[in-house]
Length: 216
Image 1 (spheres, rainbow, N blue to C red):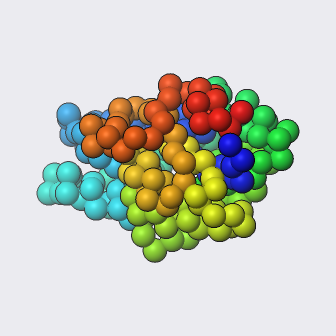
Image 2: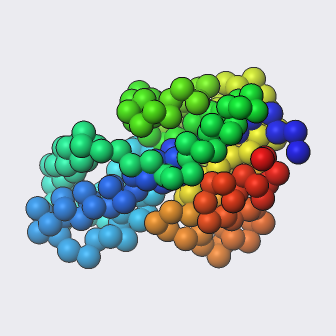
């Protein structure tokens, strides 16, 4: 179909890290005597730190000292990541296929840029990516389209000439609003009826999505 670039989310799409985040969130809740707060975590999926902190403040507000909770959670995540950062099985396969076809790739993630680069480097995926745009590089986080527009611009192409791969609803909405052709590969959270009605491609994994959209 002549796509000029491919734009990827990172956590929950290229990296199988949402499960790590969930596990460490539950562990942190346990340390603070909190139970049954998983919905708060699910509401944070796809959002950058500033926006997810607002969700946490609303969901946990008054129950714990939020700064102490965030510090403990971050320390738990760092310890987990130091041991292992899991990669989605189809991610290296697709990235290699795109490299062989000389198709430009960018990562557009709500994670901060330097942290994202570090995680991609640790997992061996960074060499496949031409640019990394983190949530700290845009004024408005997902579901605003800013990050996908900036990622496409960094590749020197229009967002409308790109395929964007996402797992979360906020990220999918951001990609759709950018004008890109969108493939959603759900991870921990299935698309809402509102998002399903958008008419984009929903696939079980990256390779199925790539084939369906005509990228491979």
